[in-house]
Image (tube, rainbow, N blue to C red):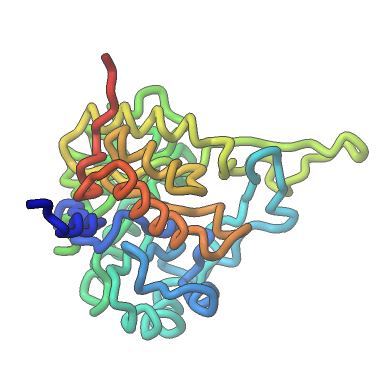
Length: 312
């Protein structure tokens, strides 16, 4: 007798340490703002998680213009930490985020270790926040402007103080501009990081040959978009092999195929960033594309892809 039973629909659910996501696709901190701008274009509750832009203790105006420049296969940006500060975030954005049905992750940034601790303490008691993501790809005042994320000891200190200040899961977002990503990843894991996300934007610059001036006011900016995907994939692969905590991969993801590459390299979830500027629906297209990809390859769970890169 021939069975006519249909193949069960594949599951996109993923587990990221203490977090449970309905699918592995989230939006990266920065381009998504605080979510309200994109809510008119897509149903945010169809995402795996929402990650808001960096929140600092005090209101921050961001960097002077020009601060965004298009490049081949990407863009340079030097927005800075433009945000309303902790109190402004609570007053202007928290109520909207609390209405969402998916996990909300707040990215935090500071100039000193103690600022990260204070942010974790205050944000950690607010209803509706599922996790905190530490932006440690920023200059700090305690080590002469050196990025927390390029120094294992400094990275460890930030994550440690955040873990001591909140019961929420802490995600360490790593910078690519380091000698050994494995060393940094192991340092934040040892400090108690529940999850690691990478990559933040590598450094770049552009010059106007007519005026002989830099195209970005601060000269150096962050490069994002499809151009950085090979870099991001390599660093995610190295990180996954160095730590036991789950990894979120990001950097140049514009399609389900891109997302599948990161999953095969070992990431358990992915984040879409710069692609939002060209297509606000990009994250949902990645979700739908992954579902089709699983059906095409007759896989029952998206987790069946994770770390299955064939090396032989």
